[in-house]
Amino acid sequence: MAHEHDEHGHDEHGHDEHGHVHAGHHQDLTDIDWSGMAEHLQTQAELFTPLYERALAWLGHKQTEPGLIVDAGSGPGVLSCLLAEAFPGARVVAVDGAEPLLERARDRAERLGVADRFGTLTGELPGILADLDYPVDLLWASRSLHHLGDQRAGIAAFASRLARGGTLALMEGGLPARFLPRDIGIGRPGLQARLDALEEEWFAQMRADLPGAVSETEDWPALMAAAGLRPSGTRSFLLDLPAPTTDRARAYIATSLGRLRDVFGEHLDADDRDTLDRLLDPEDAASVHRRTDVFVLAVHTVHTAVRTD
Image (tube, rainbow, N blue to C red; front, side):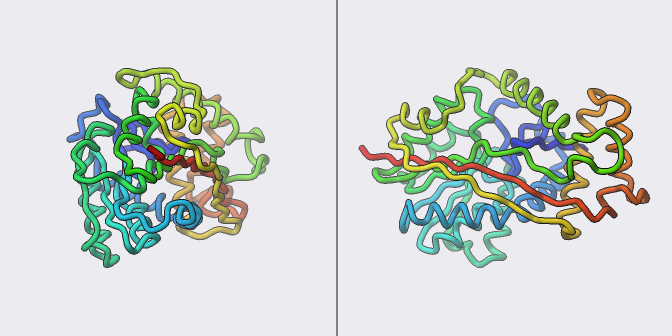
């Protein structure tokens, strides 16, 4: 089963790179190839670990010694476990709508030795957060908010779960990932920019199709302020895996481009389709499996705000 990921970090089942399923999605969850999806989500999150570690180090200066951390839309728990490692005094709760992904999160926490302060909560955001027993000192939402139809209401729900002095951290926005130079020696230069345009249209349609969808200006600090929080900073974090890159990065690039080919193939002109096919053919010297100029360059942005009342 193909799961396309765009630069916003989703696949076509409404999962972000951590596996969050957006509320009310019509896909029958029993139809999803969870093992295949979880493997891809996990590989992607592991590849992005240097970026996440820098983001969490920055957060550590803002929210010192949190007691309870919630990863809202955690997927297979790569970031949840990074949160547990970055904040050794905290209990971490991974929240997601997909129990098979949370099972992976629990296994990962066990493997990394943080299971004694790690829990999971299965259910759809934001409503499931009402089941938390205690106020939250750090609520981390990594590209899960944009899967909620009403993002303003989602932020208000997140804010309501914070302890006084607690921080909401939203990872939303950034820049589209780049894997290839503008001119790759085959086809028409600028392939990734054309794919970006298709992904933007796809993302807009995904948002419009969500239950209770509300159009919202994506001024995240303003939305957090409207929920009664005090914005405390915005910063972007870079993942820079330059060419010649690793086999793991190549595999991620091939998977990502393959999913784009599956989903957008019919919207591409014949030249771009042929170029993508060559890039994905392991036997072709021009493929991402063999060429020396592939890289991963990505930017994710984090916005923070504090509950002061």
